Image (cartoon, rainbow, N blue to C red; front, top):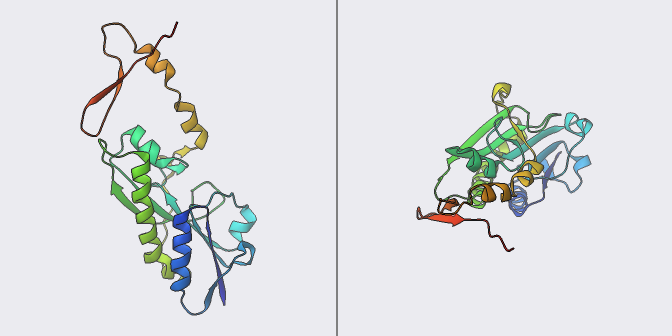
Length: 202
């Protein structure tokens, strides 16, 4: 009997776990202790695994972002900031690196640069991730997949602190506040400019 652990810290992962429990093939069982597992599947899991743990069992990850361009955190924010036309979910094997394991599938979906936010992309990503999980669950249990190495020439790694560092827009707003000149703005989903200017309260 092979033992499967589904690791998650999000509701979508719980949904995947429930689906897996209801659709588990003969010869497998879902376990509650990751150390007992033969197969480890990560669905938006927020804990760091040791190299020993990863190398002692088959480990898979459903990553929110296209690899290797968006390793790490905050991919949906960065694709909008970088002006990308698409994002997606990557199913890959886990290794000692951060999201650097061999890729089994990338399932992409388009980005609407005028209407999407990081949250709307996250919502679509959850739907895509669940569908991918259901499509691939039996195959990864049985080892019925091909995985290709990531092209390191396209690799980029983002940390949560990178997003925190760009949240304060004060210097841009101050720098673009000038009497009788256009101030900083954002464009809403109707194409209207919404202006932002620095208010001097002195």
